[in-house]
Length: 229
Length: 229
DNA sequence: GTCAAATGACTGACTGGTCAGTCATAATAT
DNA sequence: ATATTATGACTGACCAGTCAGTCATTTGAC
Image (cartoon, rainbow over all chains, first blue to last red):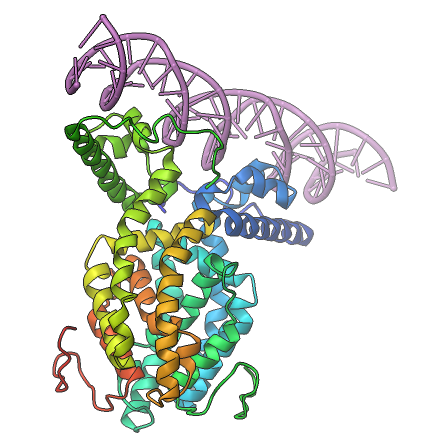
């Protein structure tokens, strides 16, 4: 993600009539949508901007009116898809809830808003391309990881102090709360054709593991109701 | 991983004297070692076979005497590195141990034999390239995932029946036992420069979470001794 | 209201560079 | 001598990024 010092010719196509701006936003959106499809299907390196352009119904040159280069397009795509979702987890009223409720909410958000969505592919892209794109990893760390971690840690720490958690493992490593989600993403993209994985069940089992539920068994017949998940 | 129907000229360089075979094995090994370095540093697509050849002290054409093409080289690399390690987890005497001991052994193997090794990079490559290389994903699934899963599941199921585990979550999803290892690999390659992660501590915390240890606190002062980890 | 001039969004053929894979030739072993 | 192994210059395909030119829309003069 080498940032060229040079300013893009494209960056801000002079804004004029309201119709123009609308049209521009539309164009930009179409390009981003097409890029999502292509990047998700082929990864960063193997994606041809010719294909993105064709899918967006636009000439290749037009892409360069809206984005500096392939890498910026990729990064903007990630930003556009993931920035909105973070707020849902790092919300203030979270702090009031007991850890189990928080874990359930996070699992629910993951299943519905990420796994059941194109965002699944975006996060997969971050995982697969992140190590090769320091800028992307940095953006993702500060924009997603850090914000979620700093929201979770004090809550979990306080829960430990109150004796609501059996030990401080989760408070020290909030990653452990999210680990199964990562497994689900990777498994889904690589092994689902050999052994499909029911993500919702996986997350339920994870919660059972963390918060008692000494009874659970079988995938369908469960007696203790869990509303949203 | 499109398999060309055509047979490689290289496949089996006619074996003759013993010295020759030794030399060939050496050459092959040098190429694989060089390929590991390059693939780990740049990923599959961005790795140049020119660089692999130079690092191996060999001409580019020589690579094609030992491997059909870039993809076969990549796949052989994964096979060579990972096939040996699986036996350590899927060993018969495992079946005798209680679940906690098994979890500790697995964590220990991960920390010492994978994370502390080049194998870390190989698994990372499988994760990042697997979705784009069905052949690789298939090999990895059958050679690694399946073997580990079929070794673990009966053990965990029996532990549930014996009441050695609080619920059947782990038996139904052995992935949950390994999830933090995946997190460690991904975090290490993307976020360590922002927030280094102590993998050993992470795995310890995971075990605490799974198997009681209602006391743990702080990273150094821990009273319940855990030998190998 | 009409028309000409100005604007700038858009196009796509083209360039420059890259790299997997080949093969005629050379080196080395038997 | 012959066979085997190794070399590296070469080729052909590929693709990100460019830019001279097109054309729809807007502006402003009358």
